[in-house]
Image (cartoon, rainbow over all chains, first blue to last red; front, side, top):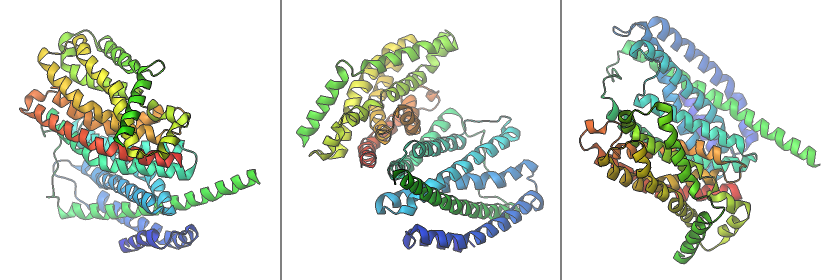
Length: 251
Length: 225
């Protein structure tokens, strides 16, 4: 199933510069993507919420992890997709890359928001507070700002081609800055608080918890891909409508 | 080419300093922000001394943001930017000259004003040197990173607010290393952290010196096509 989504990704970037062919292909792919997403998420949710054991320290609250961790992964994955598509759009002037970058941003922002909310909900029983200025939380919050800025730029420049170029520049500058921002926040955090509040269990996670987590992560990734396809199709249709409307007012 | 760069730098600096340029506004804004801090949190001198480096940096950041929108917009509106694009000077160097002029007319006056405002916040005497040094190194980064946001929003009416929103995340490393180098935020607990963060601040400034003009030029091309 993961192979299929990779196939669409590579095909999308190489052969299917033509939006009409992309529409035809995505139309055939969407049912499979949707079905696989539903199956994986159902299996993942059952395994993580019912079949996996509670943590010996954290109890049942550990189940937040199965939503929280994949969301955080997808938040970063979304930015990578956005920045990668922006680079392709800027260098090769690929029309679909432009649309892909624009479509990925709100999905990535939603996963970032989800990671923040679930992190906050998890922090309440674990740390006794809704919000901790922990390095990870802080960088996630800044990532959300970057997403929102990117979306705001798209929303304010009216002409799509111009907006796409400017937004692509912003996404690429952001991708250079994300690591710098992240390490500065880590540095700031170690200055302020010794690593006593936030403690991760590290890679020593039990297989009974790792399996549901991986299935959830895979399900979330496919979910991302499905939404990306839907949003890209909607964006292509929106642009067609825009062109038709402009033609009507001018003609 | 160097001559064209020089002429552009002098022209922009003069335009900013003379009537209508509004170069002094950033410093005045800096002063007002610092003046309302004690009004907001109370006149406790000990508390003020603790937060002084951080507050000065935050206020400096806000003051720098306030002046960003005029970086390219005036030239965009009267068409000079189109001429500059067709001129001999590469657009990257045009952006660099404008960012440098922004630093000379905004960043530098803010750095000069910072120690005086430090007095208002009861900044410790030993902290003045590190604060000014950190701000001298950090403020060019604010101008050069800010140029990206200004260039991205050049064609948008009232783009200054959006430029601030876009640029603030990029300013975070400058703020963090700047405050740490100036001795704020409880750095004394970690020996040598001030020097380290000064070096890191220098690294961020150098990266932005390269990244800023290149990205700003790309953004201008995207907006002016």
